[in-house]
Image (cartoon, rainbow, N blue to C red):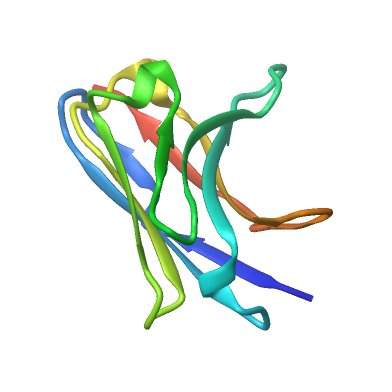
Length: 115
């Protein structure tokens, strides 16, 4: 059973940056596609960015110019660097590990962008 623990969330002012981390254990991190998702109350969870084992990156349109996903296989950790944050980025951010027919979610970390 995979264990994913997110960290790095918090409250920031518009225009600032945050670095989210997701540390993974109990599974072979390097063979999983890792993704970041976000969810606000009353809405569906949406994909923010993903990175494959070969480091191919995919971004949601809103994330392409401001967010960067990366992974460190030695640390079994995936990161999401978010820049120029805006109030509409306020959400709970979740980490997901995916293989064919198998996936694990973290518990999420709250990001609030407010002046």
